[in-house]
Image (cartoon, rainbow, N blue to C red; front, side):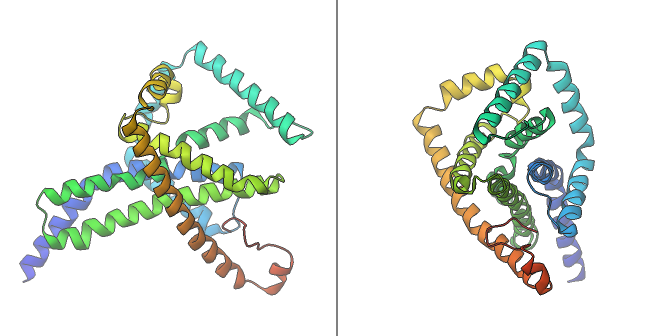
Length: 286
């Protein structure tokens, strides 16, 4: 019995270690937009949330340092004057639109818009983790024992997908809070649906066409051609519609859970904090 238990633990460890590399990389990409949302839209008061996100970013980044450096070198090498000028033109146009729509006294900085574009580009990586369930199906076919699948692989995948998708939920909640602060609260639902739609497109491009977020800069020609030519077929549209519905339903469910936990946390604070307006029913996660 003892040797069987040791063998089971060893087999479970090997199976989970096999997933560790790619899971850490995908989770790092999922956490990037959450960290950016803290910088752009809303900085939560909860130190646990801030430090927890920072810890997870570091823990998922370190095993993939070599890959990140390689991608960075590849990105810098592929950058050209055309792309840089195009990015500047787009940024200036967005700033002009911001002044016209929001009628603010001053425009947001180039750094803010650069962060916003990075937020949009990396955001599909968060709900993308849901599609990694296909790897679990493959591993089940590899012949692992029922105990390894039940006690090791399934919990590992569930934790991975919950953390990744929760990063998406919190990111979009922070975006909604920012819109509310700008006096655009009535557009939160529309913005959420647009974000879900963009992520559905991004997930299809990533899972089936194998594009990455940085291809917007490094490979824009092929990306645009693919979007214009390959996304209008019946199969891509069907996949994206189903993906959109799944993201929308799961987002609504986890948003309610997240806001409920936030409200429960706020209720535990002194009454004077509540009287000062620190808690709102539609506010972000604190």
